[in-house]
Amino acid sequence: MATDTAERRAAHIRGLKVTTLASIAGIGAAVASAAVTAGMDPTVAATNDTALLVVLGAVLVQFPILKLLGIDVNDFGAKDYLYVGFMTFALWFVSWAVLLTANTSLPF
Image (cartoon, rainbow, N blue to C red; front, side, top):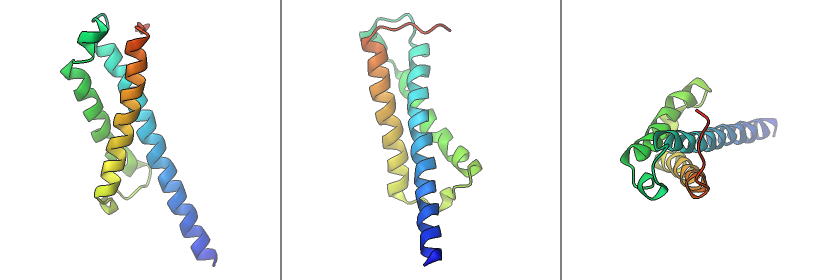
């Protein structure tokens, strides 16, 4: 019984780490995309290829970070990779859309 509880807790902590990192990476990628497209008209910035490369890089950089956090990424299946990619993309898309719509300028 105690082993079952410990395993469930470990799986929960693993899920929290993966979700938190994907969310932070998505928001960070949105800020980086806004920095890359700074000064552009929002309609032009929305079609910028470099901004898409930023989010792709944000997805790829997460897997070594997850290893450093003690997550066995070799145990990941297709569902896990799709989850990380989708969460990062979704947070990037929404955050960057807000930044573009508000026509914000970053202080750096």
